[in-house]
Image 1 (cartoon, helix red, strand yellow):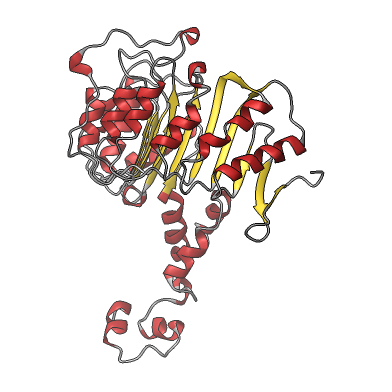
Image 2 (spheres, rainbow, N blue to C red; image 1 turned 180 degrees about the vertical axis):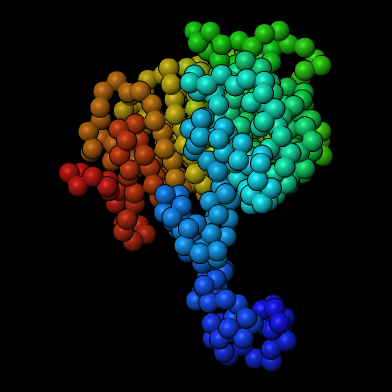
Length: 385
């Protein structure tokens, strides 16, 4: 009698697993003293180099370690990823195991050929259980066709492909997506500073990125590197975005923030990288006014300089925040502030925003509050402070 039938028909499960397997006729050499679920949990703590020897221990260890090995495929060198794709293309038993796949061919060390794209497309159509996909490709064109015919339903998607109509149409087909990262350029929208010399060409209405209003109903997290106000608005409006990371560029910064505020849910976590020196004096106040329910805020200001005095003057701008607990504010300064000066800034910020628990200022030190309510002191993790 098969093991499954024995277990289902047993009136009690008090006998050791080894006894039950012996009664079921399972050969001694293939038995495991632990349930498969326990082995699976243990193997997930092992590195890939530790899992590989486990595949040669026994049939059970081979099954479990192979399942763990192919569950998440990431951080591979381009050449290694090509070898792996060929293996996945050949071996049908491995295809259902893959849940997360990361392909990074954006480096200068590889120039994908048409046949290589065909290989990637062929493999993707076979990974029916895929839930997370990251595709970083050279910016020579949009190879969105590699996703044609794929039947998987994603929860996480990251890509460097151009933000155009074809990408929008693909996103329209992914209702379960909760986490989206767009690293590609928007055709016709020059969001980058002019001195970087990055421009993607003339805009055409037939290639415009625009999602359907009913798309991505479960999306809660958005990261965009080059996206301007129109892309941010198209993704955010009417969707429950609660965590976002965006860049601000000259002449479009405030419009990008307005677009980000179109979320149907309060923003909880926000990362901002600003390339716009014109918003230096109003950036924090704009963020506090538009996103008062933030719990964590990370700001990196480039092309602008903050003095100790200007950092202290940011204090009142934090007052609208109702729940802010963690803030990081990195920017160029006129000089390196002393620990006591940064501590004074942290105290001022906490005075205006009493919910703050951790503050990281341009010097890079982590300041945290400790002590009873009403007698809080701000300390740094550095012993010399």
